Length: 429
Image (cartoon, rainbow, N blue to C red; front, side, top):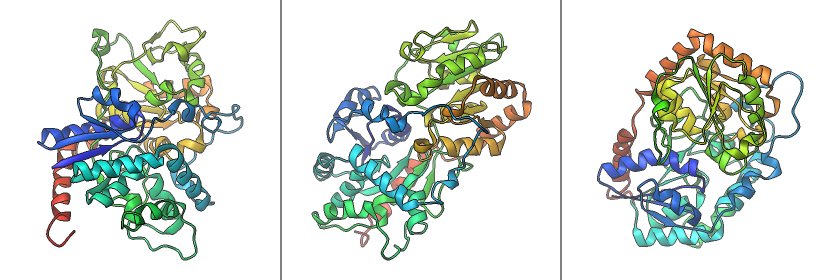
């Protein structure tokens, strides 16, 4: 069958989809990836053919916007919010803001036209989409493809819409309640003879690689899939996989944060101060722009890039921002994770906080704090504990074993093959 993956214009989001896309291709299916034109070179490095859709997206402007940056350091007790908190006060305001973000950043008018035309011309049987790209759900409905989301983190729309309208794909809409997503997409759907329903937002199914111990909203049709890290093309240096002489710690802020000037770069100096007197070899995945004029401690090796699925098997701990790739590699190899999310106002919807909450509950890592509360002393203390706590290491290995029992991308292909066959059965369309 023909399978179209649609990704948002982030390399990290594409990389979440690649293992499943490769599994479909290895099973003999025709696979394509659709994304903004400026993603073409990145898609080419995956070995998958790409379709350009929509216009160029200025990610640097999006990621460097003031609301994405940490404010002045917060004093007082360290606050570790829970993922479940975010829709308790005013979910409709959160829905309005999230709908605005999806519409203005990732779903310009041209991408609707391009995806619908692509759907009609290429006739995919299955569209697997980034949750940001709701235009792909509209295209799936118009061209008759099965619509499946693939989550890269927390289920933002699932959580917000459950708080606003009730749980699940079949939720009953509260009379008189505003729905900016429906108001935006309904006219587009009607112009193609279709109507809005909750499946447009949540998909028929949602592939999710986040572990079961990370909180997700109830009553959504999730397909749990084993998270596997994909890092693109790279060369492996010998030292990366050699056993170190003393404990090794990896510190990384992730691809999107580094490449697009996300505010977390501000704690690079704090990380150096935290590890300067640590009895460990520290591998810092920073580039020259992140380091600037800072002095690199003697026990720190700075490299711009190292594939985490090669490096982390030699590490005793990893400090990261809570992204999918770092989580997947650390989980696969049983490495304790110390999470420092970026500003709470944005990261609450993308997964780092749910991951940090879950790791603490499982005893396999720690939610250190948000980046605007981070101090060298706090991070140092967490690292000392992680390196000296056999219980944390044992729990990380336990989670790794549990992850290996989750269906692999190959298994998920078979589930989705059956789903498409069921939906295409006589009388279903």
